[in-house]
Amino acid sequence: MATLSQAKTLGGVGSILIFIPFVSLVGYILIIVAIKDISDDLQDKTIFRNVVIAAVTGIVGALAGASVFVFGAVTGVLTRGVSAFAGVAAGLLVVWVFLIISAVFLRRAYNSMAKELGVNMFSTAATLYLVGAALTIVLVGFLFLFIAEILQAVAYFSIPIRPPTQGMGASAGPAAAPPPSMPPQGGSAKFCTNCGTKISPTATFCYSCGAKQA
Image (cartoon, rainbow, N blue to C red):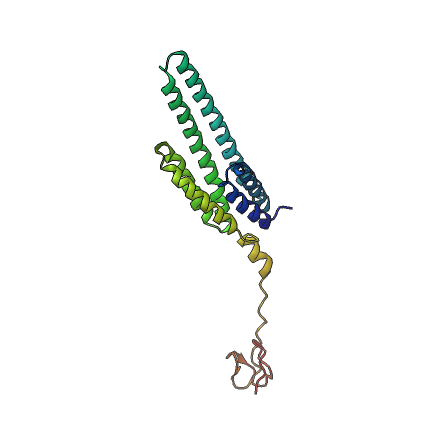
């Protein structure tokens, strides 16, 4: 059964591995597995679905951009460089558009996780991902993406063992009903020496707090 503790470890380790060359792909896979666990634990399938769409969109965008880039380069060679620049520009534009679409779906998933887990860092990281994706066309966006990935790691390591809503319901349980108050049985009024509750003049113990009376 999926657990948030497992997702916390997988997501945190995966977020660190994406910074390491040659194993970054493993990091992304671990993050996707972690999100699947979170989606199952929270019983919110839209979280994992949005992440899958984001991942597929990113991969398709990279492949489409590479294809346009190669086609433009080959055409440029055949036409003595006339369309080489246009091919490169078109390839980069395709990648940029798909990257933004991918970031939008990732942001949807992370916003849901932030709300249901009570970890607002996910929402912050997702926003920076979207801003970074939009600004990659002027290169400064890569800085935003780098910061977003750092915050992503912090967010995963901040995941609670159980969702806040489940935690309160499971630990606290139904509220205990207060003991019924017993009206004084005639005579003059008397008050508990411990809590001040009005009790019977002949009462030995307080009906409210149970303190012994003098």
